[in-house]
Structure formats: C-alpha cells, structure tokens
Image 1 (spheres, rainbow, N blue to C red):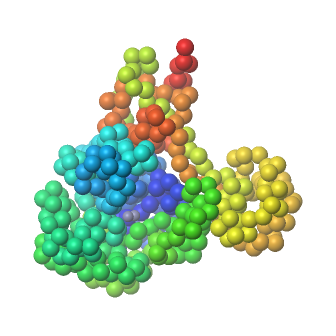
Image 2: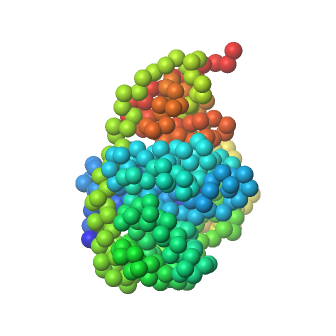
Image 3: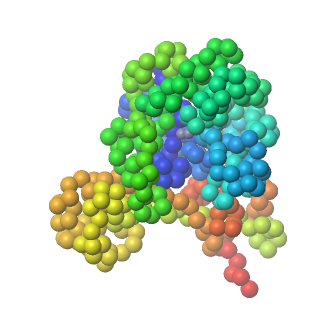
Length: 414
Ligand SMILES: [Zn+2]
Ligand SMILES: [Zn+2]
C-alpha cells in the first residue's frame, strides 16, 4: 500500500491547486488509505484537512515542508535568500504541539522579510520530539549536499539528521523526470544502505491529475498579479495512483514504507486550542489579529489565463471592467453576454479560469478582529505569523471559530 506523504494544499499559497477539503474524497476514490498535508512552511489548513479526511475514512497525517537553513539568524542578517526544504510529520499529539511550536517560532522569531519562516538546526533540536523527518524534495539539504559536495559531505549531513531523529529520519526519493533528481536518488539510496534506514518514495503533489499541470502553471506564473515566464522543470507534480507510484521503478518496499510511516502518525489537531481564557484587550502586550484570505475571483482568474496564454486584449479588459469584484465565473458569464461570447471565441479559457477561481493567494491581517488572549498563550495552540507588521492567526477564521478561539472587535484607536 502506498501513501502520499508529500502534498501541498491551499496553505502553500499560490503554489497548489489542491483543496484540503476535497482531496481526501478523491484519494479514497482512487483506492488510497492515508495522506499527509505538508504545506510550505505553514499549518494553516491542518484542522479542515484533518476533519475532511476523517469524514471520508482516510487516515490523515499532519506535517509541513519547512524552509530549512543552517542558521536562521545569520540568513536573516545577511539577507541570504538561500534555503532548503525539509518535510516534518507529527507522529503523535506531542509531535503536533512541537510542530506547531516550531512553525510558530519560525514565523515569529525567524521571519525572513515576512515572506517565510525559517527553521534551522537549533529549532530542530528544540522541537524534534514526536516528529518524523523526510529529507524533502531534491531541494532538501541532504540531496543538495550530495549533488554539490559528493557522498562525503552528504554522509556528514545525514549524520546530523540521524543524531536528532534517529530511525525517524527517512531519505526521500522522487522521480519527476528531472536529471539532477536521479543523481540525488543514487546518493540517497547509498546513504540509506550505510545507515541501515529505508528510504521512502514520495511524489511532490501540487495538483490532482496530470493534465492539471497547465492550471498550476498559470497559478505560479501569475502569483505576483501579472504573468511571468517562471516555469517548473516537471509536469509530474500530481496525485499519482498507487499503480503509477509502483511503476516509477523503485523497489516496492520503498513505496510500501510510506503507508507504514503514515500509520505511525496519529496526531489530532482538534483539542489544541481548548480552554483559552480571555483577557481584556488593553492588558495585552502584543495584539494578535485574525486574518483574511485574498482569493482569486472569476474575472481575475480569466485575466491570468489570458495573460499566460498571451491572448490578453483591450477587448477582454473592456468586457471585465464593469463587473463587480469578488464575482464568480458562473455569475460573470451569466451577467455579461459579451464575456460569454469572448470565452466561446477562446476555447478552454472559461474552464481554466474556473479551476483557478476561489484559490487563496495570500493572507492579510484582519485588523477589525482581535483575539483577546496573550500571544504567549496562543503560541502553542494555533498557527501564527507576522504579516503587515502584526501578529495574526494564520488559519481561516471559521477554523478559529470551530476551535472555540475567542474573537472580539478590535478596540478603536483613541
Ligand atoms: Zn520541496
Ligand atoms: Zn514539496
């Protein structure tokens, strides 16, 4: 049995088409039993993902693909943008509390220009208990060390992980059709042999079916609001079936171990925020605000599709201009015969826009809503980050409500 242990959802803002509340049902339909959530650097969707999995009988694993550096302070002081990836999975409730502590510390103490939280060896040492680590995609520090420094440097790097995680560290093998990745695979298999651990096969998943690559391509090309020529080196970042994973050609045991790892992970995020006591907001040293999601609406999605396909035109802009913000593609098409006509002359654009609309692009502070609990008490309970100069709860508002986190209107400035 194979389980996907490396999956990006909406929390990997502007890098994934996977809806944490829909994918579990799809996975069940293709015959799988477990799946992990490993968004880039956040745990924003852990609660809805966990609930959606349970609802359809899929075993959920809560994890995160963190941004990893040697020394976070040094990276921040030097403005050094280099980072590696590392996948961490919560084995039990203690592991989940540690993962939350680690992710929150990365954003609150090691925020790199407020765009990402950094994790370094110091944070791993502090929070590793109850966590399983995978070496990450081929941008992990272990495969990079092998590709750039050879087996000697990679072995030293492996030892550092092994000293922290012991047998809960697994080299991660992938086959997305990238030459450098194949070189990394050879090193990782050799290191696994030397250390007596089993490597695990993953597929870095960002969209559901292979043909969805094009919609993901539009999403990442327009992540800054206009089309760039950024492109990925592979079109294989989909949720493959077990058969497709076995057909990648790795030993079946390296696939099977994924389900074993998944079954060892039994963390439940629901009780995390229980029993938070409220204080008056003027006694709070630092206020924690709720957050809002900026979501792609229908007309914006269509603009992105047109820009990437290079069919943007003054005509389309003119048709979209009178439409209200926040409107869906379906409503836009109903209310504008000119738009319906334009779409019929540009086949596939309406469908592509429909795939992109509703996806959260980023989160911003909701300065009208404050959580009347001291920051220190929220740290170990809910996902937090710094954004726009404020500390915000980065999970969706309805998750806060579901968890029973108190929310109050922010006091008006005097
Ligand atoms: Zn990665
Ligand atoms: Zn990834």
